[in-house]
Image 1 (cartoon, helix red, strand yellow):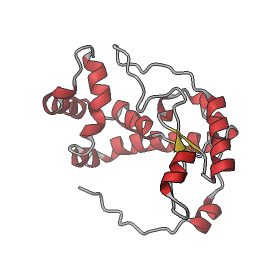
Image 2: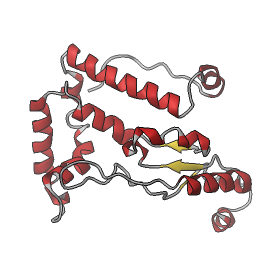
Image 3: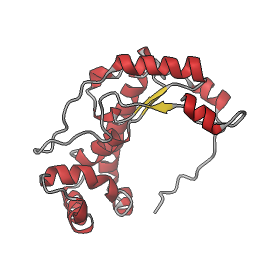
Length: 197
């Protein structure tokens, strides 16, 4: 950070947070059978680096990447160690694609698309399950229209599961009852409710 600040120069605006390796991997590490490997997160490192980032460099703190594949019982620790940001996108992606209400024929089409269009990313030592897990995020764009056009009942069931997961995470990450704080610091932008295609 000292070298970065020197290279940046006096009075220049730099980064606002740091990202550190504490044991996770973006998206998790898929095992040959398709399950995601459990990891042990180094909360002590996360806490110490967040403290130093804030105290010595005026940053928000450290960011935890790959958190969405951690067990539920780990999430209360992030506010305890004052983590600045927690990345969770893969968990929401997994929840949608693995939900029982997600149509099996659409899932098969997505996986066939990945095997045809992204075959060059299939490593020799990977099982099909590992390859599909690591590449399926690339199907959200091409299959957005089909996902938005799911029957209302299926969308509602998946949406309810997402809502439950968000509520759980908001509570564990200690970001409930923050509406006034958000209103104070974030300028809201009205977005039309029409489904994007």
